[in-house]
Length: 357
Image 1 (tube, rainbow, N blue to C red):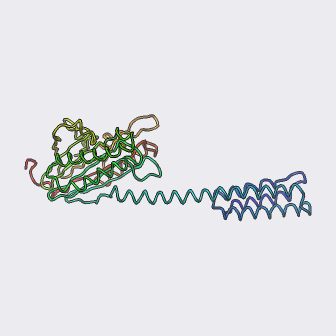
Image 2: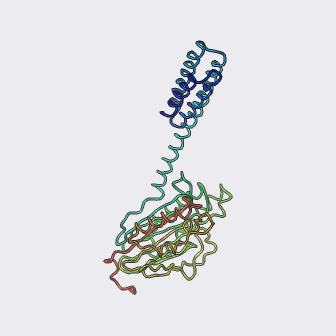
Image 3: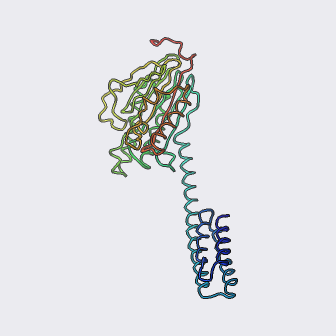
């Protein structure tokens, strides 16, 4: 408020002291405009009223009466103040609507994409979700974890669709995983069930949205036993997880990836499960393609494997902080797509059993 009031005081003093042919009164219209940047309609009205009083003071001190010129300047002040107040009211209404939308979005995210606990059985866990849009909180990227009797199951995925349809598809997959992770004995059976759920969900959506017939979900489904230092993985068209061991980064690439979920007609009778070592001290990084497809100003993709290999920290949370900060710096703070990441490590006591058990 000091800036518009200061402007009014300066204009009044200079106008009174200036030669008769110099008139600074018209500059008073800038005061309500400055007030709009600092506050709402009430502040604009107060500053506008103060500017009108200042114009009256100028007229009475310099002329001793109010001339037609001063009357026109006062009228202009009133009109400008009224217009600015209207825009302030509209801005305040939009801000309230945006706050409500953000509140609903945050609530939906808490329900749909539940935060992962820091510890799941013998695993230390960290997760992060980066929305491409500044005001967005949810999108087509997803992850979830489920604790079973003898291990931990995880899924990370990316819905190809956009907008509300992608959120709906993500909700279908997450709901199916959280329920079926405890009911299916093998990872292949679980993945087959997820394929069926996603295909049915996409079929229902296609009936109302013709663009949905091209949607699918890339996903990596993992099973990490408590008593074996291994990872069981089914890769459905998803970027391969990264295993970090002694600062060496190894992509866990399966020999034959499965088609993305929702494309069941291209899948044969079973899902192939591949096994990789995962010992104490290892770190596992799961991510969506929004990470590796982030570009810098020159159009270069984010070199995730190289940046992870140069990292010298310790622990899942430190790893994700490093990647998040480095990724945002690489992309100048603006991602082209949503990005989700999970980092895992196994505690030493959980990997004492031989890998061939």
